[in-house]
Length: 361
Image 1: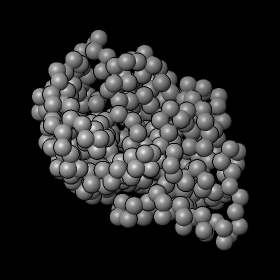
Image 2: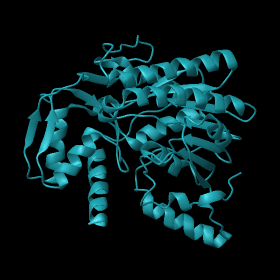
Image 3: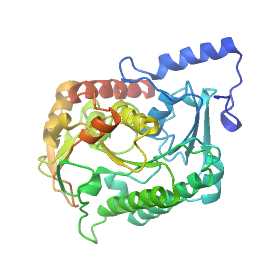
Image 4: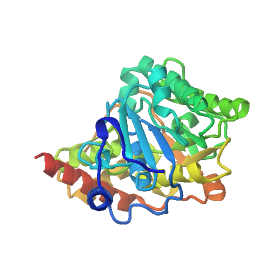
C-alpha cells in the first residue's frame, strides 16, 4: 500500500495534515480537464526511470494519490522544479544514473510496475552527443531490463519508451508492425532511432525468453505543460512570448502529429493496466493534430498574439519529412484514444509557459 517516502524526500504527516497537503498539491499542479481517465492501479509500487522528466513527472502526478511512486533520475532535466510533487508522502525521488547498474537495480527493487522513460533525446542533443546517446539509450535500457528481471517476483508490467523515429523519414499513418526504416549510417541524427530500436528488440527478447511482462510504446511528438527539454512547440512558444521572431529550420513543410502530454500519459496507464498489453508495441499519438511546422508556427503566433515574424533558416541535418501514426491498435486493444486537439493543447501549454515566465520575472 502507499506509504510515506523515505530518504531525501520524506514527508511525515497526520491524516488531517495529509488531506491538506493532498488538496494543496492537487490545486497547484493539476489543470482542470487535463486528465481523461480514472487510474485503476491502486496500492502498487511504480518505478519510473527518468521520473523527474517531462513525461515521467506528469505520469507520477496521475499515479501518486493511490500508489507509491519511485522516480529514478539524474535531474539533468528537472521538471519537478516549481511543483509540490516531491513533497507528496507517496513519492520518492532517487538521484542516480541509468548507466550505474547496481544503483539502478537497487532502486527498482520491489517494484510492481516499471516505466523506463530515461533516455537521451532531442535532435540538438543527439547531434552534439551521438556516442552518449547510444551509450545511455542502449546500455541504460539493458540495465533497466536487468533491474526488472532482478525483481521478477513482484514485477507485473515493464513499459519501455521507444520512439516514432524508428519509422524513418516518411511515415504516413504508420502501423506498429511495419518495417522500421533508419537513415544513412554516418548521419548522427539516426543514432537516437537506432538506439531506441535496439531497446525495442531487447525488450521483446526479455519478454519472449525470460517471461518479463514487457510492452513497447512509440510516442509521437509529445508536448504540453512541464516540457523543459527541446522541441519545436517549446521553442516557438518561448520565442513568441518574448516578442521575438520565430525561426523554422528548412522550408516548414515537414509534417508532425502532435500529442498532448496527458493523452500520452493515458496511453502509458492503459499499457500498465491492460492484461493484453505485454508482448506488444503501441503507437501513442494524435493523427488529428498533424500539421506542417509552418502551420504550427502560425498557430502559436495567433494564440500568443505575437508581434514577431516567421523566419526560415537552412536545414543542416537529416530531418523527418512526414510522421503521422495509425493508432487503431491502441484503440482496439487498450481502449485508448487521444482526446486533446492541437489548439486546445497549445492554449494550455502557452498558459503554462506564460505563468512560468511571470514567476521567474
